[in-house]
Image (cartoon, rainbow, N blue to C red; front, side, top):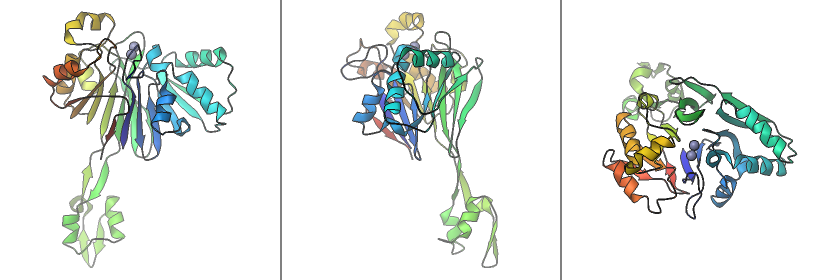
Length: 302
Ligand SMILES: [Zn+2]
Ligand SMILES: [Zn+2]
């Protein structure tokens, strides 16, 4: 499992940072979260073909999170794509994609499926279920309709090798049965799956941008392994953050702490901060395991 940060600025791209875009790669699935301007060029620089992407999850239709979609649709058409592209987004997404298709002279031979997610505040609903992961969405408070996404790996049953060794069982087809949760008989002895296996919890990654801080947010994002969170401003600009419906670095730190996150990755920095270290420091004063997202940062999860 890999997380590749392709854009970590906000409204204005800078020399170092492109507009918001994060790619998660899980067992051959390429999942794009937001698609700011220049997203496909960032992908090219990272050595990844946009053709691999089948699912794009848009938080909201502010330009910094969505300006790259038109270019992506066009390049996929130009490359004679035949497989469907799924775009997930908040209420109103179907109309917006239809407007894009009208605005540009596209010739598209693939299916463009728009999944409009009309969620109530406080509701968290699965939007994509695959064999080894689920992606859910919930509403946040930023403009009219903005979503945040939760990527959750499926839990896995693993073999307790120390235990099976006692039966002389190291490599054998019956291990596969145990892994499916079935009890087995081996050399006349019963081996129970509940003793010979354990459940490894799948990783949980939250993608949270843009929003203000609100009461129930910590419950919606709880127990994440990685919380990717906006930190548009420092806390001395808390009024501005509230006015434009964003979080400060301090609030991001508070959210990580209150929601029991393991690691906080700050992103969506205002262009006013050429050096974002003071923001990292501010969040770290509340939640120690905080890092800065940079364009092309890769996080590997095992
Ligand atoms: Zn934004
Ligand atoms: Zn926004």
